[in-house]
Image (cartoon, rainbow, N blue to C red; front, top):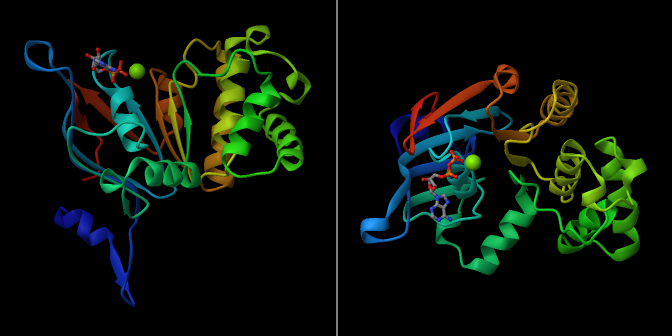
Length: 245
Ligand SMILES: Nc1ncnc2c1ncn2[C@@H]1O[C@H](COP(=O)(O)OP(=O)(O)O)[C@@H](O)[C@H]1O
Ligand SMILES: [Mg+2]
């Protein structure tokens, strides 16, 4: 742990409280082997403060999505450690890791990843069910979550009947299913027009400012970055500026 990181931790009556929602320590991700190996993330160390809103920016192919997936334990690093809310997730077995993920974080994928044969409310309901809610309660909660993102009237639409922005909002409702303190989003305003982007920003503002959730959002949008408290720039798999280490 770096001395700066140590300074942000306080030990109270033997229980270590960490100010970081996420901490990465010398995290590397290499895809492929030998000649075909790609270093997608290259020895990155950084902390994401609890309750903060961070934007991750950088050109295509420089490792932003990989970094976000490593932060959320959706992918395992080739080297280094990832600590999520005080738990070193890189040391966990897959079943334990899945439980920590389900409890602590919501992830919004770059391409939504909605199940095409399920309606909006079924997509959200499935996430509630995975989180341990029973059927009746989850149907009502799924509609409430869709209402939260302004889509209650589209509850019974299939993803193919929704616009890109609407699908993205279903993905956000799904990510909120287990009321996560931490939201990781990969380009949630990509391909949205400026009106839809403004709506999305209003939603993110509420989730962060009013509800105190920690948000990390990969984005190409200067407007989204302008709303963030901190902007991390990624280039060639490394953080070139903005990191808190
Ligand atoms: N599953 C994968 N298998 C092999 N290479 C990958 C995979 N995912 C990403 N990469 C490579 O890793 C690098 C970083 O990709 P990515 O994290 O998607 O960047 P970004 O999100 O900034 O566009 C790129 O060279 C990409 O081709
Ligand atoms: Mg990406």
